[in-house]
Length: 377
Image (cartoon, rainbow, N blue to C red; front, side, top):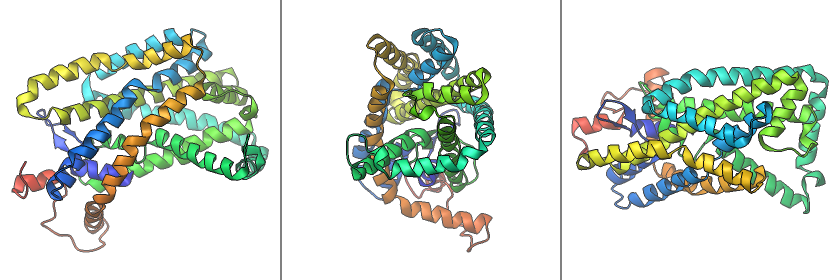
């Protein structure tokens, strides 16, 4: 994630209002196309874009939030879905900059709620911590995990599911979060890249681990529940009814930042598709239309799932499909562009850590090369 975020900041563009934006399709065009003279850079860019846009039709944020809100406040998943849809419209109407500002306010707040509540439950039951570790390892490498198969197959399944959920959770390698990182104000791409690594640690090692420990230590892991209902039940047992309300609010805020962040990803790809000045009027029409269309598929999926009594596991299988193509394409591209990342890393060490000698002619951003005439804009 550090590599993809760094490259997205280095190769980013600036729009007509002076706002920066970028992402995988931009480092495919500039890194592969212009710097490496790869004439077919549009092939991976199109594959990546199509892969990302499959999530427009198969999205889980609305479903997860609706499930959590409806089970806590007893208002039904469809009404909860429409409430969520309305709030998404309000936020994305302000554009990419507004989305970034709102996310910067909500993310620390929701993480604080979630982490403190989870740690309280864990330390409240501190005598169960060692047994929890024992259960995790015994289940992962014994017959308990092998439901209907043999142990080797079970371990392979655990790894596959773990990787799938991790990518969907922290987005490392998916090529999505670099798009929103590219809008950050930073003096060096590596600085933002390190924030990407911090995200993975905070999301996977802290938030996800706390969630898992809470579910196991409260005993609801074997309750037959899944999805948001499983987590909410764990916090309700650990803290009481107030815990359920706190976590529902946290999940709601998590969902808001995720959904609005995904809108940013789509808009950045569309901006790249219509970046020709002759298509300026068409670009704004497309972006305006997309703002109105974006939240609708999420609500339609909730309606379909409710009407057909679709279990949460089935919905998640659809989500796994949407991560495969863009992640595969993005990882191959960043391997080809890794040399540029290491050049930026050496420059960062020289400038800020006094490791090595600073090259006064080194360009920290690709746009600096364009301005100097090294490459055609």
